[in-house]
Image 1 (tube, rainbow, N blue to C red):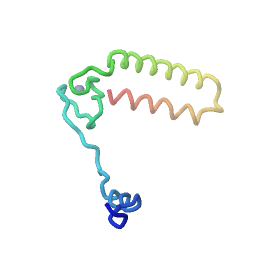
Image 2 (spheres, helix red, strand yellow):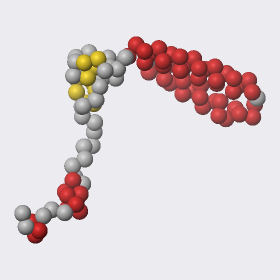
Image 3 (cartoon, rainbow, N blue to C red):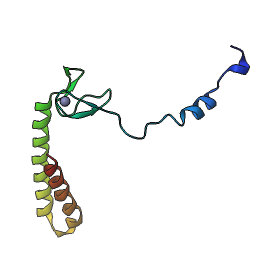
Image 4 (cartoon, rainbow, N blue to C red):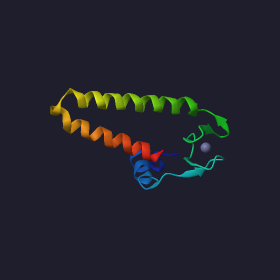
Length: 101
Ligand SMILES: [Zn+2]
């Protein structure tokens, strides 16, 4: 191909500027949940029928993390009234996470 016909990086970038997807492409998992294409299912931890994420261990980790955060929030509250602004935001965030589950 002659140099005159060559598409340079600039033209390639200009053409691809319209290629972006506006919304995530979701696929149905056999477990019933939706997951992003070419990503493992976050609900059952499988990818193309293969178990790739240990969801039980992950759930246990989440429980431990929540407990630790609660303990930290309580410890911060006991420290004094000076850090009230920061401690007020963390309990509401943890409550929101609990409601999602
Ligand atoms: Zn699934």
